[in-house]
Amino acid sequence: MTIHSSKHQDDVDKNARSSYFNLPALDISVAFPQATPASKFPPCASDYYQFDDLLTSEEQAVRMKVRECMEKEIAPIMAEYWEKAEFPFHVIPKLGALRVAGGTIKGYGCPGHSVTGAAIAIAEIARVDASCSTFILVHSSLAMLTIALCGSEEQKQKYLPSLAQLNTIACWALTEPAYGSDASALNTTATKVEGGWILEGQKRWIGNSTFADVLVIFARNTTTNQINGYLVKKDAPGLTVTKIENKIGLRIVQNGDILLKKVFVPDEDRLPGVNSFQDTSKVLAVSRVMVAWQPIGISMGVYDMCHRYLKERKQFGAPLAAFQINQQKLVQMLGNIQAMILVGWRLCKLYEKGAMTPGHASMGKSWITARARETVALGRELLGGNGILSDFLVAKAFCDIEPIYTYEGTYDINTLVTGREVTGIASFKPVALATRSRL
Image (cartoon, rainbow, N blue to C red; front, side):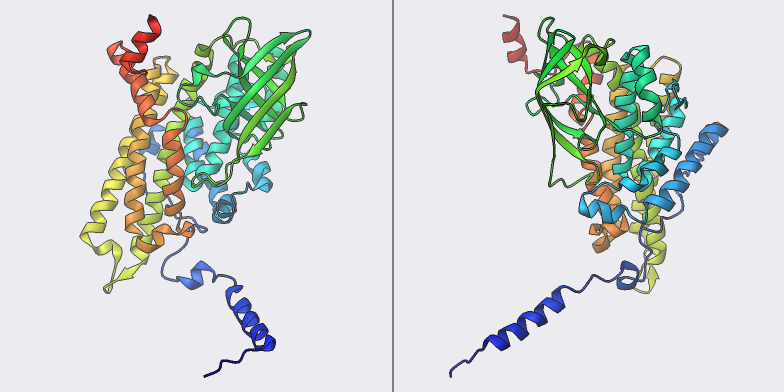
C-alpha cells in the first residue's frame, strides 16, 4: 500500500494541532467546580486555642488590616505570578499603605510596632503568600533594621522614611557563592581609598536585589580584616545584578547574583556600626524571630485551605471531612500550629523584655520550620491530586517552605547555635579541622 501525503494535508494537520494545543486552560472553578480555589481565600480557622486573646488591640488591628489586604489584593494573583516567577510591582503601593515596613523601628516614618505586632504582620502576609512575606522581611527586618541599628543619624534620616513607605526598596547582601552557612568567612573586600571605599567580590541568593534601590553590602575591610557594612546605590558603576532562574520555591521573590567590580562607595555610605561579624549577628538574631513567624503563617494558610476543601470535596458519597483518617491529619496539623504559635509568641516576649538569646532565636526558627514542613506535607496529602496544583495553595506552600527551612541559617546550623549555647561547646567544624586550625 502506498501512503500519499501532500503539503496541503500537512498544513491542515498542523493547523488542527495548533488550534487544539493553543486552547487556554479552563478556569479552575469550571474545570474543578467541587472546591473553591485559593484565589478566593478561605476564612481563618486555625486559631483553635484563641491566641488572638493574647494580643493587644493594636496588634489585633495590624493583623486584620494585613489579612484584609492580602486576601483581597494578593490572593487573586499569587498563583499567576508564582508560575511566571515574576514580582507584582503594582501591589507595592498597597503593601506600603499597610505601614508594616520598618516593623519595630521607632521614628523616621517607621511604624514602631511591638515585636509581636511586627511578627503577626509577617505571619499574616505569609498565610496568603510566602514570597510577599520574604520581600517584606528582607526589606524591613534585614536591610532597614541594619540601617536603624548600625547606621549614622544622617543615614537613618536619609534612607528610612522612604524605605518605610516602600517608595524605595532595599536588599541585604551577606551570602556569597562560596560562603553560605560559613558566612563569617566571606571574601568580598572593601579597600580604603581617598573619600571612600572600593568593593570587590560576589554575592548570591540576595532577595530583592534585581530591583532594589539600595543594597546593604557586607565586605571584609582589607586593613582590619573585619566585616564592615556599606550602602550601595543600584546605579553604582561596576555593580551588576543578575536574576537567579529555575527556583522551585519562593518563585515570586527575585533572588540575584551580585557582582562588584571596583564599586566605589563614599565614606558617608559606610555603616559606622558594623565593625565585626558580631554586629551582623545582632541583626540576624532579631530577623530570625520574624523568619520564625513565616512558617507559622504558611501553615495557617494551608490549614485554612484544607479545612474548607475537605468540607467541599466529596468522595464515596460523603465530604472528605467525614473520613476519620482525614480528620486525624487535619487535627495533627492544627495541633502543630497551636504549638508553633505559642513558641513564636514566647520568643517575641523574650525579645521584648530583653531576655532573648541567639540560641532562643535559632531554636525557634529551626523547630518551627521543621513543624511547618510536616504540617504542609500533611496538607498536600489531604488534597490528593489537587495538592500539586498551585491554584489550591498547598502545592505552592509545599515548595515555598523549603527555602525558608534553609535560609537565615539552615535547620542544622540553627540547631548548632542553640547547642553551643546550652553546652558551651562550638561544633560547627569537624574536630580534626578545628584542631588543625589551632596548630
